[in-house]
Image 1 (cartoon, rainbow, N blue to C red):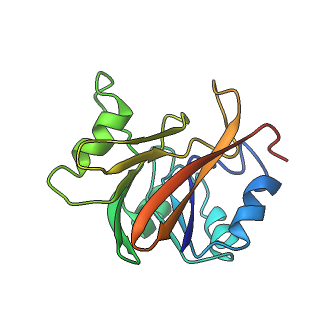
Image 2 (image 1 turned 135 degrees about the horizontal axis):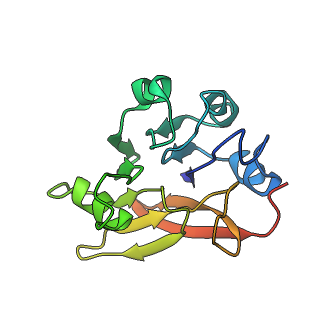
Image 3 (image 1 turned 120 degrees about the vertical axis):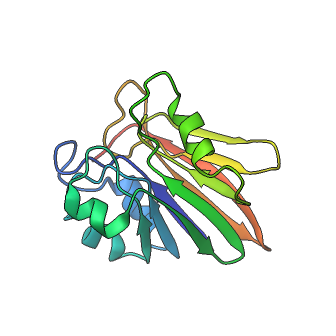
Length: 169
């Protein structure tokens, strides 16, 4: 199973369309995860035309997006459980990654996916849980490259990779 993971698309402000590099991977995805900051509900039909799409809302999303997706969820894909959250909060002294991990404390998860910072992260924490921030495919901010991620479930095990690229067109 191939899962394309995106966050912080910020459309249409940051881009009027999805980048070709991302579209190439969406074309054969089995599922898509979006970790919030869609900024327009118009993004959902574009993304979900490729594969079943699971998402959460972010701090730049309006009430329609919050109502549709909520703020956090656990998605079951194949044999894997993935916690999905944007990661924003009011206490600026707590790192986004810490907030995301703490939001799922006590839950057995194969991965925690978050966004908000636009900073790509891929690592494993104690217990083997993957912690993944796909960055942004359209708004790299202070990052050198645009990014998203691909997760695969292979023989019941979850693996992930970051996809980094220079051109968002």
